[in-house]
Length: 101
Length: 162
Image (cartoon, each protein chain N blue to C red):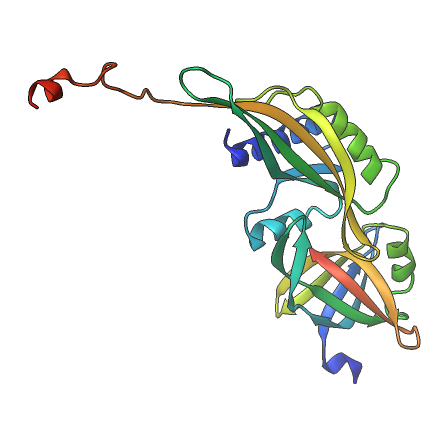
């Protein structure tokens, strides 16, 4: 059932191995403070079950540049670096904030 | 001085120096983003420690000349830093140390050499802040044209016609 919604995502690990899972993904525009100027920037966010990408949360906490590739539409892949992660609700679902690269 | 060109020159100086040290894969500098697209491109350098160069403000002295106008201006640039960690290679403090070395005494177009004026943290909200350095330099604003004036006493023809 989980595979029926969301977006296909691939975690590209440091050793170049890959894990493919289905994730929730959204990209609303939000105000972005930078210096004394306000910009408008897309906020890329994904949510995944911790068991889908084991070790990803811990690696991001250690400031590693973890790469995620999301298939936004069929055959269109976008690469991201995870800026930070936080655990939601019971801690089993993880929310990752992304930067498009 | 063109503030935009100055921002670009300072960012270029920093990038050139990091390239010379073979560290351009860890550090990145850019002028203050013009557009939302520019800030997106700046964010895309997330794997590197980053600095944005922003014209901040000027203080301007009075006229120092007896003839044509000539005024000194002290120009300040704020350098805003972002990185994923404080210390070590690719760290915030490491980048700040490099940037001080690259810029103190560096001369940009139409100005005296840069000096370090201030350091601080820009706080956006509790727990979210951005460290900055302020560099300043002095430039001169001079009158670029001649004023033409009638001879002392004015036109004597006016008097003869009275």
